[in-house]
Length: 366
Ligand SMILES: Nc1ncnc2c1ncn2[C@@H]1O[C@H](COP(=O)(O)OP(=O)(O)OP(=O)(O)O)[C@@H](O)[C@H]1O
Ligand SMILES: [Mg+2]
Image (cartoon, rainbow, N blue to C red; front, top):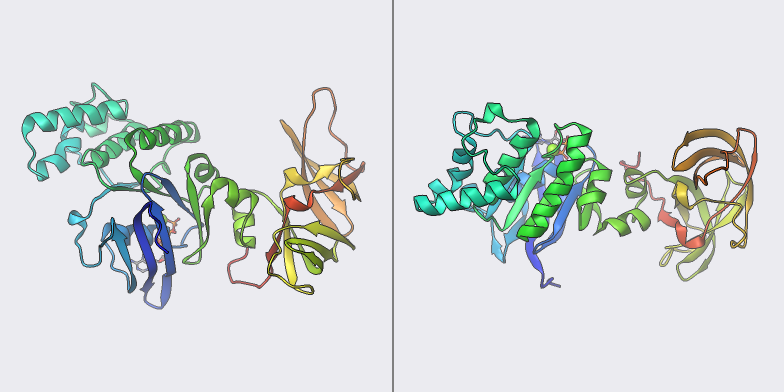
């Protein structure tokens, strides 16, 4: 099935270094104008995928196509892409303006057109007036903005960004996340962004491809990846979760009753369509979805507060229930002090908030 919005198609791509499969059969479609993030732990193959899209590495198998045109064999400088990498240095001997103009000069554009485009690109990244500055006179954040302007000025079909904010402190990083997203929306450029920071991925992306061990485990909106993780790896990598080992004892469509030995009872879960009674599963429940003493739920189990992990906008508790330890995040209401260790707390969750996941072990589940 071809996606009419497809701009870049990666089809069954494999890349091996020595005996190590860095990219192990990745297929994904990037849509025109979207902000797509490759998210995953160090070494999972994110940079290798970008380098193959850029043409610095050749796939051992599979194809990469942009706008329906296969890129296999096309040299990097002939690909319609812009690059911003964490360590992609600006030319130190050139001014900011000359750095940005570089790609246009290579393409032999007229001087007045170049001046206009450089001016527009500088305005876009909010560095109007910086054209004559030297690179060493810029802060880290300003340098990354120049790198972005330099890549955008040639109007690439696809921008590849490999941890471009990785070297910046948290405050600047948050600010540039918003700016980058806004520039992407204003220019309508397709962005493929790499990060291993799940918060950054959720803030910025239209869709997230969660990678693990050279494969894509899930490609979905940030909302779906968080609320409907497809695998135990995705559930644990994107946000905090409680993972309980159990066995399906009742099934009605996607709704399941799961017997959890550590809790010593059956509990409800969702997303089990296609599974069978008797299957070994993992149940993933986000801390904020474990409800304390919620009368609207048809069941509850007794727990005891072991630790108050953090008290801010939400109280975060570790609660002992049976032999299990559950993380519970309860919204803090003004004037109500948090529960103390030893206090009893009744817990439950909505069936829809507990995802039933295949427990088939992979090497990568942490
Ligand atoms: N040129 C190379 N030669 C040998 N092995 C390589 C080469 N490039 C990457 N690898 C290996 O391939 C795997 C994937 O590397 P890659 O750089 O794509 O990971 P990554 O997801 O970008 O990680 P990080 O978040 O640390 O940047 C790693 O195990 C890495 O050691
Ligand atoms: Mg990398």
